[in-house]
Image 1 (spheres, helix red, strand yellow):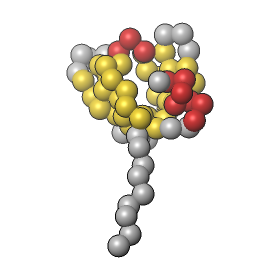
Image 2 (cartoon, one colour; image 1 turned 120 degrees about the vertical axis):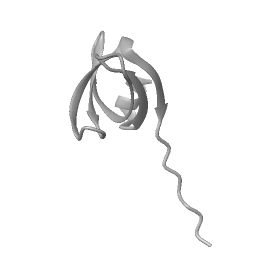
Image 3 (cartoon, one colour; image 1 turned 30 degrees about the vertical axis):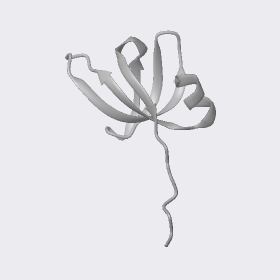
Image 4 (cartoon, one colour; image 1 turned 45 degrees about the vertical axis):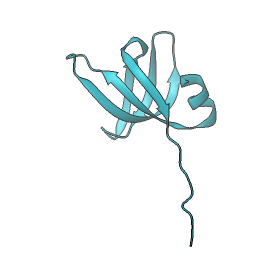
Length: 70
């Protein structure tokens, strides 16, 4: 999912375990994928962050749908 997001420039909604053990939901755009971590722009913090892949609980692509015009 991370590689696909990087290739297509898609944003992801992510559930993540922070260093303090808390769970957070973040919207990220993947910039680089390494062996044990990845670099992404975090919309929650409005900055680039490094995330550990093992701490990711779930990844879901953000789908933008066009609204129906009536």
